Length: 492
Image 1 (spheres, rainbow, N blue to C red):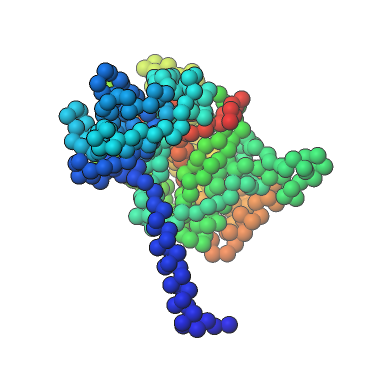
Image 2: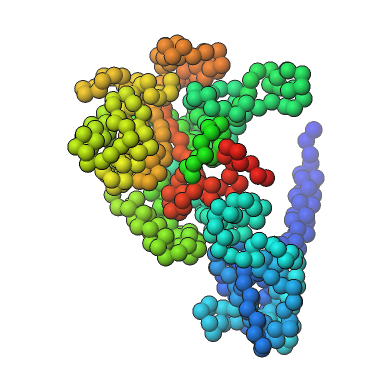
């Protein structure tokens, strides 16, 4: 049934009326907005936030107010100090009414709270006497034991804002390269990497009966790659930033059981060099925003750490931008490592042989000591990599078949990104699955992609927290994610 033109107009009039009514309920300006769009001096202002610190003397009191949107605080000068509620402590939630004025101190502006300007301080949320965040300077290790409060620490707050800023930088980069952000599933019936370190999921009710909610075994994903390839076959250039899960019982400062993975799949690429160039440009786009202090991205980190760590951060950023990153084959890497080991210029726990996985000590040494820069290692042995990677033509010097893949190794971290050209020929892919004695049935949907309109394509995955860890010069990966999950640790 068609609506008349007059009825449609009335409908839009109602919508516009509703929108005009909603304008009355606007968000009050946050501290970041106030500092970015500084009001004229000597105008009334209202600040909402939490007490970062307070100092009281006979004739005046000073309050530093934070609200989490920026590393910067707003100083409130209170005269007389009796206007300050007696129960105020660090962490107290407040509403401050006063006058925005030019400051005589280190800050450019401050809020004057006086009887003359009808100044007022209202407590919105008090804190207990034993509230742990009244004191500052707690160790990160202690803060991990109080997850409900830890993000109120200035340093962890900065890392959490940094996480948001890096994600925004990546969104902008992928958008500039005409990628489509997608949402592949977290629940899967496929083991993408074949490692077996999966979290199986089942409903409580089905556990009692022995039935299966999905009619088959289902798991939390370790990688969205296989589903991302499906999206790539329809949309050409796709990416995602998705939580992933690995049931590895590794209790180190580099491992999480729940983490976020950035993954991209690109159609019509046939050379690993296309993937390495793209991933290098992606990371450099983020680093350039840090160096340029785009929207305060650099100062957010540098202003909330000590001078030595800030200096190390800046030097790391500069190093990442200084030159194009090197690229070597796995065979070259083995030769370099063996030469260093045999000459006794370095002591590895294990001497690597061709066909072995590169250990963390090997990866870190190559990036930090030998190249002193990130380095791409390409063309790993077939047996060391997943079934879906395209097998290379034989090459001189290689002791066995290799695949068209790469790992990005960075100093102090080791592997940051892994990627490959995917095998798009269904016959070759089925042959490799059979050779590995894998069950083909759960992968039938994936194989179907190769039967209709299959084209050369490739992609990569990057541990998001590892990137944050490296760029922020943070020691423990559990401090760059709000609620870390690891073996024997799921506090809240």
